[in-house]
Amino acid sequence: MSELVAQPAIVPSTNAIRYPEFCWLLLANMAATSATYGFLVIVGIRIVELFPNQPLIFGAIGLVQAVPLVAVSLLGGHLADSSDRKQLLLFALAIQAISGMYLCYGLTLGSTDILYWVFPVMFWQGFARGLTSPATMSLEAELVPASAAISTATWSAGVFQASAVASPILAGTLCAWIGVQSAAFVVATFYLVGLFALLRIASRGAPIQIERESIKTSIQRGLQFVFSRRILWASMTLDLFAVFFGGAVAMMPLFAFQILHAGKFGTGCLIAAPLAGAFLTSMACLVRPPKARVGRMLLASVFAFGVCMIVFSISKSFWLSIIMLFLAGAFDGFSVVIRRSIIRLFSPNHMRGRVAAVNTIFVVSSNELGEFESGMAADLIGLVPSVAFGGVVSIAVVVFAACISPELRRLDFRELTKESLQNKFPI
Image 1 (cartoon, helix red, strand yellow):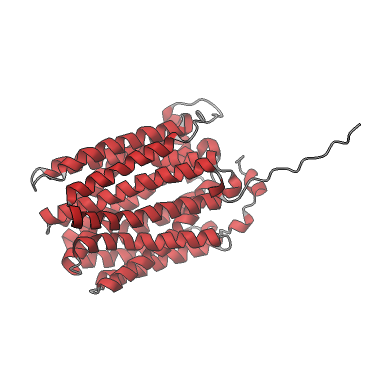
Image 2 (cartoon, one colour; image 1 turned 180 degrees about the horizontal axis):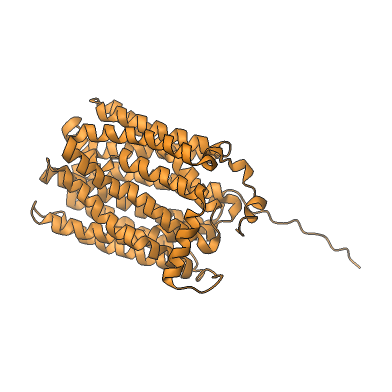
């Protein structure tokens, strides 16, 4: 009798980029992000040309996106845990593509009519993103094993930042060379690239449910799960308040035109600078993933983010402003990698969509609602004081988070082995 030869076990790769379908998902995210940030610059340039002294309009654009995004996110999390995540992404990206094409014509209109086109498009963009974020983070977990969780978070953050860096510069350059409308048509084609990439991913059907439950019960359990785990809601809250008050992306066109006198190309550079810093941080995390004392490093990075925003607010030099925004983005990018890893490592598969949905609400509150806060503050106390105040609040938030969450301060990824996680729930 021939001897049976034991076959070596196949060890899953810890590098997420080795999984082809994950690469297609990265391409789809890159295309969608490029279009979103490209339109951010294009709309900003058009609005600042037509309404140079009305910062509240920029805040209103953020609010119009935030309202549907927040309203639909919890439903999006339920759908991501109860339906085919790929199909949900296709539906959401199709909405973004249609509304993007619609916006291309609206950007040619005058000061009175343009807002009737911009605001509805921003509403539907927000609605689509409320579905996209939970489905994307949940689909990542289906395409890549838990052994590559940190790599997945790092690649996702890195690709997001890379596309978010390049597209504002590209959009600003195109606006200067070929005009706002032509630039908008070029940017809108990125959505079509995203749709093509999603079609290359196989459908996996709906996740297996432990028990059937109503939409209301599903959403309630998602919220209960997040708020019963301090490590989850503390990390989300840290980002919420720090970026809500400290972020100033919506004000970049005003800084470029009124404070730094840098024009259209300068607008794109200011928006791209923090994203460039975040991208380089993400690439560094690929080489050396954060594992030791990540809780303390997370708190320190948000503290440094606030300091950079204070210096940026009082700068009158274009290059100093660029450097401060670059450093602010670098520190923020590091915190993004850690927070995405926390969500992945502390969420079971059947709950990932709902956890991601709650995280989306926190992110939206910090970004889009933060834009509205920036516009309101700039209108009430002035452009420069509003950003300086936001940086101070970011620092105060770090101190508060460190005091209320000892779990966050002590967080160390080296201790989160697969076995220890499975004691909490199956991955």
